[in-house]
Image (cartoon, rainbow, N blue to C red; front, side, top):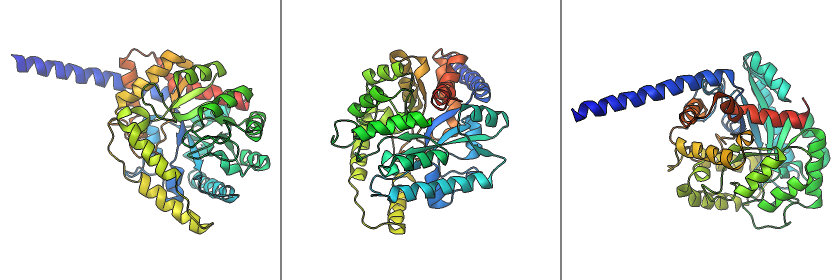
Length: 386
């Protein structure tokens, strides 16, 4: 008798999950799914990845973006902080070239988007809308002219710093050097506002975050961060920061990396970041690119075990909603740029499972559409004006 009751309960639970998952898939078909940070372009430049075909190596490809309903990802043009001087400019151009080759090879599948209107048009046409973001402000080589040219190449977002401080912005994972932003750093924020480029404060120190908010006239994003109250990790945001972000009208994209989601993984993540931040390779040009390839592939090709689960990602979304409000949370997975993924969210195709879990917690369809991309779309429109 007891065994029969257990089977009934298990079957009922599976049926309930199936109902929520089916409803989640329907929501994803109607929503504009925006992921504010993926590092998949690294695999294109390092391993000539063909994203038009499904693979089991990376976290993102075109078929799985469709399966997960995340059809407007921000492709990061990531340059390691050990690229010195003007070397980062060369590296951004290489990555932009890799992106162009991807676009040219798949015109029926993907198109570059410059604003919110483009995303809606491309989505309606059934294609993936690709957005470009630069990861690490040192990539402009301390030159606003370079920033303007990156904008002309289609870049619509930039993180102000990365693992290390640069010459004008302090990083969250380095010893403070500028007490936040320098005057030039504030000028970078103003110029990004003028151009219509989103200011991204993931990676910056707390003081640099508040300095940014004191200068910007437009909403900012934390493209791939999570909540410090749930995982005490430098790149996560405190509750006070979340409230300040809400007052600014900005959005935090929840990062799916294990250390961002689970305190059990945070210390290990801190050690790995400190190790990577301390790298000081010699050489330039192809020699430096070769070092970067070896470092990235060894760090991200094989996932490390993690305690984090899909439910942890749900908890972080819940926390932002409670602290900052439903209009200020989105998705910023950091897929293909994290060394561990939560159980149940192993790649972008699993996104409907996250939505199903949120449905089970009582989230309404309108709110889920905001989380999946509506909030990011609002910020993009506010910043670009279209």
